[in-house]
Length: 235
Image 1 (cartoon, rainbow, N blue to C red):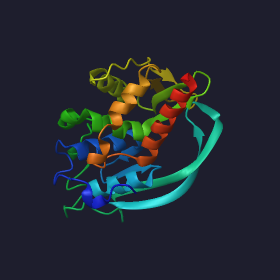
Image 2: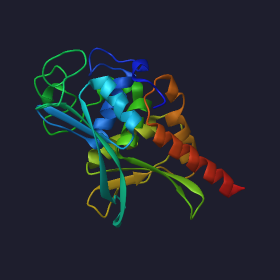
Image 3: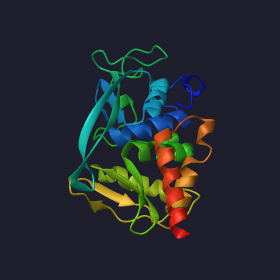
Image 4: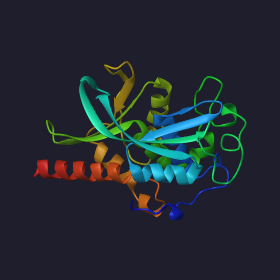
């Protein structure tokens, strides 16, 4: 792990506007689940899982899973999976010692409305960390060998969440056009960042991330490798 947990700056309130909470809730929205008494968030990067645990407490479990590739269910992949559980029976509690789910009585005390939609207003000053959490939770980075370009896309069952991610990208300081939402073969939705804009967008997304430690090293390495492959392809 490149960033020790002790270096992660964490606010006392898990809902306060802060880079760490924005990153955490981006992950939860991208690959997690919130109920009245429990939060579960899944990542395949051990270092990122440790960071999420440092932010919100809880218990980590490691497993290996095989799942269908989101864009093509005929392809499967096997990978490590780290599940952070907060609240519930044996699910741990927040590190600041509050009782209940992150010190709240239920899911409605968290940034989730009655229909299960996320409310991210408190994190509006930390769009980059929120987007990074979303990408690491439900996004992909790859090198497209057929075109020699870098591909960045977001995949989720919740179309509203993906439209919110599109809005965040539209407001970021890098010009990064995105595709309209399309359906996946598994029944969800996805969109991609324009290939020409993907290098600048990805570079901005991970710029200076080591200063906070709020990133998945494996995902950043994937971006760096993809950028190097694209540069070599152009040569």
